[in-house]
Amino acid sequence: MPKAIRSAAISDLAPRHKVWLTLDGSFLMGPNYLRFLRAVDETGTIRQAGKVVGWSYRTCLNRIRRMEGILGTRVLETARGGAAGGGALLSPEARWLISIFGRWQEDVAKYSRQAFRKASR
Image (cartoon, rainbow, N blue to C red):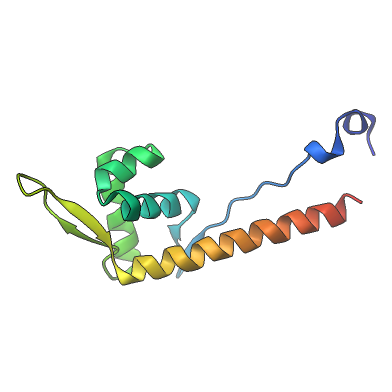
């Protein structure tokens, strides 16, 4: 083991990774999309969900359109704002995607930590 690393606590080393889904070779979603969709589910609006992930409203709309174009189906069901208020709900397809993506991301992180511990012995 190199001297510089020996002087640091080995327990401070941690693996990091980023995973994403593609469909037919096109980027579909990554961790920020997952955070955004979960935020839409929690807040009920695209604007508030965008604030959670640090995206402008326009960026949110562009990313939703991109996902819908790749999937060929709606990701969000929306109602326009105004006096009655607007809102957004996840489509069944979006709920399914965040469910599998979230579980997969957790499993990958768990496996990565285990593999890193094994490799660093």
